[in-house]
Length: 469
Ligand code: ADQ
Image (cartoon, rainbow, N blue to C red; front, side):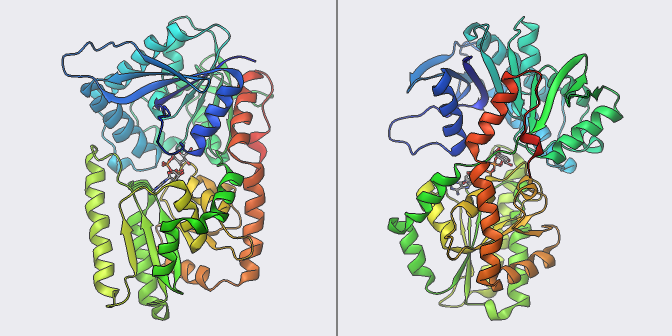
């Protein structure tokens, strides 16, 4: 079995005393432990001004996995990370053209950091290693490594949506992006919709075609391009949730609710997650269904993220104002409708809170997959499961067909769906939940990881993964 090299923007180096990393990190480290592995990327740290801008990676081996990380200069972070990755690719790939900012300076910083990654990684690579690159920050990495003479099998997984061609072509260098993807042997998307968008682009822009074996020929290379929907550690999550009654935060929350129904939302503070529209839908629901006033509470747990990007600061103000307005309008002396919390919550407590909640509100305007939707389902009590209210624009909607689907732009529609979810009979809730849970058990994060690696290791056989759902 070949050694596995993972490359991602950030590397979750385990440190003693920190809580276990998320499901993705666990699955990827598990795959690396099984075959020997190296995880390469940014440390999260900054180079001191004036320091050598080409530092050697810091290498540590923990539990059978080697981690190699580099610090980045402030200029790199401004241009590559906050700039081209998060002010151009992120909004554009989430269909938000009006939030993009394209500059030659940030594009050049993006390529400079990808070249730096390639230069620092290449000496650590052995000829038989397979290399799996993650996400939009690192699209050009394989092309950089190939330019340096590496012939290893290389795969790329995009965690965010791949937009339709009319949106992708807003990117002035869209042709280079797709040419860079063709330098990989396997390209994985979250859903069949992303795959279809890629296929339409390739056809319309006349850069390639699909082969009879399912692969694409683009820019002179044959590439396996498939959907591999990312999963969670379903059973682990379900077990943690079932045992969460002992968790102090979960117990205190339950007590504070009394017999009120809990509605929960858990998202990074990001404009793609549709948090403002969701709060508006909750406000409309309280207006239209006054009998629920005093009988429910909506808990929105939202840690801040990417505060260095201006659009995030603006959204933070907007959401905080909205939350204040709803509470100002509807609170009673002994009842607060919305609990808006800008914090991270540990996994055990989170699982317990999901389990307490009668409704999981997962209403992104656009999302690659959305793991919160899957976690909410996995955490439910099989005897008395809650209802997942899910945006049709989350990748997870391709799989979770037992959810109540909603269009988050339709605030009134989402408000109506919320009332329907809270009123749903036990029988319907059980039926909707059990099909979803079974699917999540088979298509968990280990399955995702194995499917991708199988495609990466077997050059000519498209895997089964794109045929699910
Ligand atoms: P994200 O945009 O970060 O991921 P998501 O898939 O929902 O979105 O994952 C978020 C994770 O963070 C979940 O595991 C959730 O439990 C955790 N989390 C969120 N808020 C939290 C809080 N307050 N406290 C503790 N934990 C919290 C990107 C893409 C997604 C894709 C994933 C994986 O944008 O579409 O599903 O990668 O591929």
